[in-house]
Amino acid sequence: MKTLSKTCMILMVTLLLGATLSSCEKIKSLADVKFNSELGTDLNVTVGSGTEKSTQIAGYTFSESADVNLHDDQNIDKYFDKLKGFEVQEVTGTVKSVISGPVTITNGKLSIVSGASTATWLIKNFQVQTNATLTLNNNGGQWDIVNGFLNDKKDFTVTVEGTTDKDNVSFTLHVLVKVKVTANPL
Image: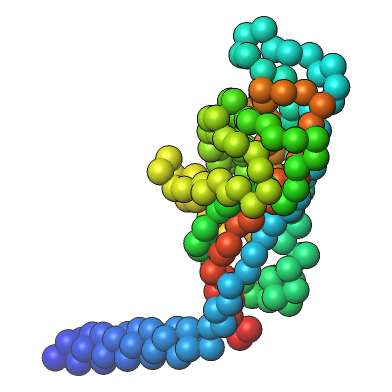
């Protein structure tokens, strides 16, 4: 009988302790801070005069990349050690400017890379003109890849490469990753 009583007592204490710890986590999550952030960079693409025309793919080749540092965002930097998670809301590429007339990206790809993780979107017959926007969706799970390395607090590199229908042109493509960020200062 005493053994049964001890067992019941231990079980009740364990249940009470479990309920208390669970409640503490719920209370702690009330202190979560959520904010939106825009992680972006400009890619200054130049297809020089006399750029070699690719014989395999009709067009003139280009490649440009730029790094994005998470600490450049003031809120992310402020809560960096207390970050709980990122959730990609939108990824876009917007042409900010075009020099030397209209051009078309005949074939290309835009990639967001961190370590061995790569999210890639294909670009086909995109008219490069000021304010033209590429909407980079999650159809192939690309946002999930970006979420993965952001949740590991990893900086990333944005790369655009491909071919254009003309040489001797330059344009600036602004790539923007909009995210919802959760942090907990406790």
